[in-house]
Image (cartoon, rainbow, N blue to C red; front, side, top):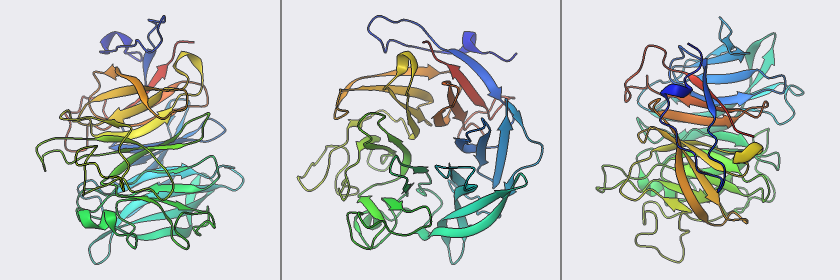
Length: 356
């Protein structure tokens, strides 16, 4: 049964007068811990599976052979994580991957591959020696509207590294497509774009203001509360971890989050702004432990949250959300990651056909 709308715990009141709900379709099933999704201009979807495979989906069907199999360190939260396509893909035919590897401990790397004959061939390392650990590896990579590659990292279970400007841990990094440091980065000669992050999991740009937003896991179980965050990123700004969480203990040198989960645990992951239809301008965030898709309605300038709502639940842990070239929203489940309760069809890609 391909469509699942009747099974969804779905709530939509994002528009003041529009009660319409999206149709939810099971687009792909049987994946193993999918982590990130990127669409090519021809409609193909490139999907990473955390054990180390890059899968290609064409019209809802997964190619039998992976486009690449990487010898990653698939331990804890590590493995093959983020994926991004060059803004002018397929010319040049570059695919970027973020993955964990073992070398005197766990490390993370961003590497560029070249698509050739339907396979990904190693091209060059873009960012290397990102501290890694069993958890808090970050992993989200995306190209911004400025053509630069942004990389979200975790603190590798060493919170003090998030405050160390010399470390790549607990940061959002910004590099050129070749891995160079842009001349207009906030810290000369450094790829660091912002610091004081615990575990960056999502990156998204407002379609009008072109400002960057991120999602970040809070210290659930470590300090007795969750305090997951959605942040509006400013170049060179410090977001406080581990000195402050959310706005508690706020100090003027640190930037408070745009939204905080408080005592509720979301474990937010992938994020996406909707660019068309009745959901246009909404920031969607996929949540793992919270097991839902949350929508944030922002003010006109994007500087504050006017309201937020759960718009999809009933499919377990959700890892990524991406608006496709067809205007539908695609959501990855993550129920086979050792923390979920997988159904027979898991893991899946869900296709949300939005009301117009």
